[in-house]
Image 1 (cartoon, rainbow, N blue to C red):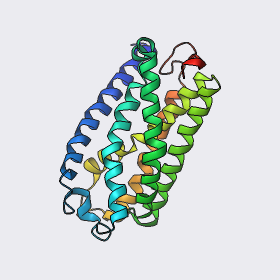
Image 2: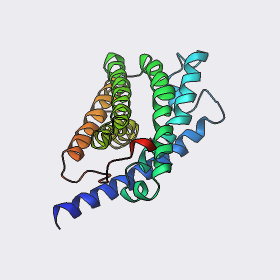
Image 3: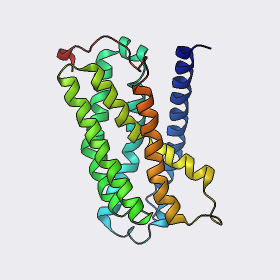
Image 4: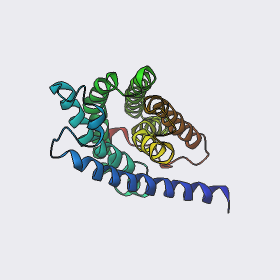
Length: 222
């Protein structure tokens, strides 16, 4: 197996994994459609569930973040980009607007009340800042016609987007209530998930074959 084929296989498996976990997240999110304050994650947030502002940001985040996951996923397909250039631009806009105007503000507020103590709070706030910076940088680069730089920062942005998936994978696989302190594990998991995703993103970026190896995007079609 040559290196190029190996990278393609890893890419396909990664996309399938993200798609599967996005669907599983939809199933998890469905438990909140009844707006019950005593289900799922809210059981651990009883100190703030009676705060209408926190609850509003919570529901805004959980009901919109899956759209970020799925919208971002479509942006890294060579075939999709080449055959659906205009659709790519529209989905890209949805992804960017969703992050910058909905999820970054919502996650900043939620991050201030995060589990995991100071470790968890600082981790979530840093993720939120990086999420905004990477996404804004990607937009600025494509406006200048720099499609290569745009792709790199979109990869970094999406790496932050899917930390929610990595976080849950680590928690489900490694957390044992009888072994680990929940608050400490939660806080460290925030940082570990971010480091894993950014490391993979930088690895992808520095490969000779980047996702979306296409001609420069026409600035007039932004």
